[in-house]
Length: 437
Image (cartoon, rainbow, N blue to C red; front, side, top):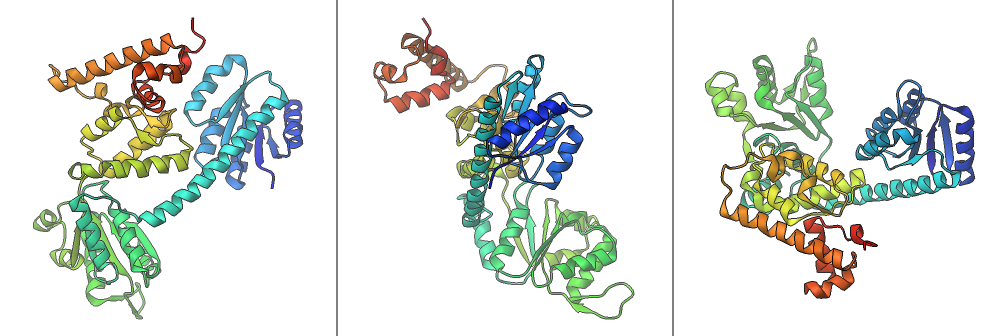
């Protein structure tokens, strides 16, 4: 089946010309004249590639790009631009565009770029499928820290049972992931997740009914208003459901998993949480440790989240450089695993290499982005001096050998692959020295 391309160009003559070129290249083309029509088609139909002019009537090509990248399965986007608009197109590359073509260009050049973009779309799709398989095999929670191993053992032990479970931990520690793992291992029915269990009474009963034979996950149970606490407690106590205005009762067939990041004991003392509901929910408690207490799990988490970023965004990043890993290990991670995932997605998207350097990390994680001590420690001083000396040596080595890594490696006393790793680590690009006098 030919790859589907959405062509967005307001000039009809050029739209027809480009459309014929793409069709001649055995691509299926849908052509529209403005951003609004393009966004409507994107929401209705799947496309592998979007080819859009930057300047359009009304909303511009950047708007089309944002709409495309926001889709669950985003197509690759190629922008067409006049010479004066090239800076805007380059900026769009940072926002996720695949490539741009500066006008005037030949139809053959357009076809070549679109085919490459379609290949990239197919590769990312296969990577997503592989990622889903990896997730299924790995399970939801990973980690080798003793606190994490204990949490996983508890999850495996109580998963087959129907007892209520209370998941506790700071925001971002993975309580919903743990709930889904509990449900997956139980092998029973559907899972319904609802934050704080708010809404109309009939809606709440409907939620519990929807989870019949499975799991009802109540996130942030500490936020539940007292009036709703009374009703939930009665349901748990009696094991029955009754809709407002009805006399018929239904058995409670859902397993309840609740989660909170709050101090529930303090909430009970302050009268914000009913003690009887608290004790009914905490038949089994599982504590999810904060990331700062399981730093030995960072390499495992980094590997998983970089794979996720590669599958989701088509990023090249596969690992962190020693400097980037040191910055990640030094950060306090107040947002825990959720913050780590977002930080690594940012780094993967910003990095152009398979090895992510510190400059690709979010600003708050970079050493220069953190408040500096008035006087650097001895270790800081030595590390900076070593990095500067290494970069200076490698730069001079590449200048001497005009970027030829194979010839430079024997002089450096290392293998070719080792020299490549050192060059990446210090941010020295051999290509910049090729052909230099």
